[in-house]
Length: 493
Ligand SMILES: Cc1ncc(COP(=O)(O)O)c(C=O)c1O
Image (tube, rainbow, N blue to C red):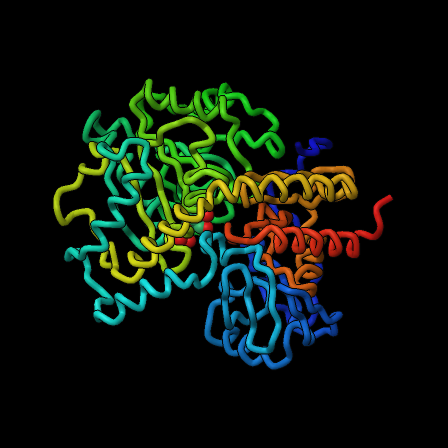
């Protein structure tokens, strides 16, 4: 259930106010519109918190932490700033601690990495075993665990006998690989006219060039100046920012852009767009699949964020009843170390000859060991089912909180243990990033950690705890959110 009212704001950036002294985050540069949150680095007194899971006992940010932020400010690009100014020291399952005795319930999972929980013993033990052998790098020389992981990932595919797995390091590499394979498939089977990659407005597939060409954010692509015209975007059928969720709009947009279906090599979509999270309507996803089949288009699902139980299914596309040709995976695959994968149809995955589709760290031993241990935990503890179950509690409670402040909590969406609340100007769909940031900071001060608000302008409060979060901790954290919202917005009328 979502509130759907008023007119959407222009799909563009609205300025964030709230610049204070000693900001930690991004400012604006000419021609580069800012999205990053700005966190004040002036320590403030906050009420003490002491519960089973949370502890806040210092000013925030912690005065002793400031030299670390100052040092980073001098050595890193400011693009690396923009997250709440706490120093991570220890991570245990769903709790993050700093070196000064503060503890937060984690609603970030890093950035949707720690599906099986942070720092799980099973993962650490697996890593220790590999470390003790000194096997820290292997290029694509074979090691036993690589075979095990590839087999495990194949088993998760729509057809284990007919799918193959290619391991890499980052989600962007995985989506780039999907783009490359789609275009190669079109070229080799039909010739150079089958060259288009269709993706969606507001899509995010990573920050490398191909991933950004397929991405749907104009401001992220400005640096390219001239674009590859074979990348085209169509509106995403989210139902809130774009109320027309019909598949006809997909067809109509392609026609307007002069793209003929037989000329399309691949379609790529996130299983859900992160800033909502916005899912495709099931009917739309099925029509998209039929369209891809009709024109022999490679259908790619970017599961980098949605995969490995997050949405209440092992892969989010299972909600749609479709069978992607290529599946890009990352983040939650290992719940820890960097590793990504493309799981794909054998005939597409085998387009490249031996040695010509590899990466220096394909199947690197430590991330592989972490991924095996993480997948075993996800399976053994039935974390996908758990996420579905906990997600029902989460969504019920979020809708209840939304009802209290329906004027500004514009739209609540989610599935499994990923959810988002769009913060808007009263009674409209105009995003209110300043208010979103205030709520985010109020939560931080109470011992509930989220990453900075996401979405077009930083207007969406995103909720993504490890899938292992116990029910009492989930309920406690929802209560913290409610207190923070009540405090920031004032009592409900
Ligand atoms: C849906 C999606 N695809 C791709 C990526 C890129 O992954 P990475 O940052 O590991 O390159 C992300 C990262 O946020 C993502 O959410």
